Length: 260
Image (cartoon, rainbow, N blue to C red; front, top):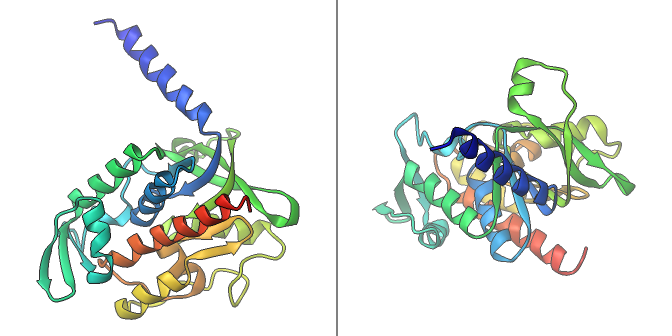
């Protein structure tokens, strides 16, 4: 075995793909359940989609299930998504299905990639690109290690027709926009209203109703939608996260198909 050949294989294949995905239809920030679901359904509709995840691993909070018990609950409304991703689930009682969180993350990631989405981990979004009419038109990226070490290293950019903030509780992309865009977000306050206390029944319904475009070119999905619009959190029930990702993909696909 030649170590140099191994190094060249990694470097050349990685940067060939990264160069190809500097101009995409949709850039998703955050590879949690809603981000991975959105990536899968967008790729299924033949959209060019890249997911940027700041951490080493994908899956967001799904890995840990509830309090590090690696099980998640999905309600009956989202059971069909588990079936589509071939995630096994047992009915605990009518309407409540239990799945293995590790299997769930692995299946979401596998299906998203095999459908054509590309995932770039260890990358942090430090800014957005803003063009005419305050439209979000891309991301400003740096290595997560640069951010962690607080190094002064200039970033690079990725252009996209739409951006999805799927960064969970932190709503990181929306926070950037609030600082940088004059007319801000389509919320009651114009800013980030803040996540409320846990109320799963309400949160699971509201996350779907608030999945959508929060400012021109920027969509929110999953817990980012809850945080932005001041909705309750829901805990280790993940049907809303998956349905929200699918809904974001449907809305954006419809826009792209009409060249909007």
